[in-house]
Image: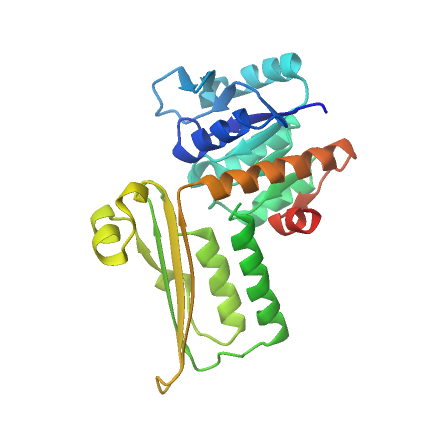
Length: 276
């Protein structure tokens, strides 16, 4: 089987490095040893296991990417960069004809999708790459569509805790707020309780110290008006392995769509789940 070539952008960020480690251990993939990075990064190279990755700053990306395409042939870009770079990176991928998996949250998601649909490439865009969490979200979407107003009158509390390097509010939490709105709860994204302080995470949340630098803990709590009924949904993820597995499965799915000649299409992790 011909290996799928992947270029992981966002190195030396923690998630991007973990993705690289995962693909190096997976015989389905071949690493394209370059990575788009931010202007604040001073290193020119970064070592991940046996691989040396050349870091490409914004000023170099057009010239070097064309060279990489000529040398490596077709490849898929995996984006785990920074919320502030989401739209700029997607515009670059579309302009350069680079199919991509967008795992970075934030940015203007409507513009992101519209850019792909107007381009000659296809992409997977998802606020969460963990298939099990995506499946949970799908169940909540089903409930919101099938039983609108089910929790009308209930109060909602949304708490999410991530490592302090995560700049934005969780995209998963924001998506879940939309479900609960349709289920009858009056709640805005601005009310999400976001925790990034490691000491608070350990002392008050109970996050294991070993995973303070890489975790995703979410709890959604609904309480009836009279306080006699309480529902709580929790998913606590320690480490990043669950996102690696989902991202690599997404890359396999997208590679097949590219092979089939799909262009101008935006796929989601739900599409990947249905194909699993």
